[in-house]
Length: 99
Image (tube, rainbow, N blue to C red; front, side, top):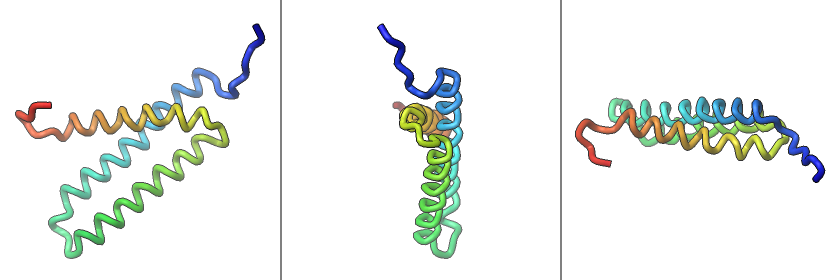
């Protein structure tokens, strides 16, 4: 059988997953800070919308730079984003919450 070149090494994929976790942590950490502080702002709706746009832009630009034209890197980053979400949900869960 011939060797298939996918263009991305295993070491690169591990790095991409970890970078996906970092991008996810920035996104969900920013969401947590936004929700936590929104009630103190004069225009909370505008602030939440601005926060969403900034968080989307950071993740989109980060993924674009990370992928560098390799679709495999996009695919590898998704589990990192999911893992970051999972960790943030567990971190901010209210004490005594059953889930």
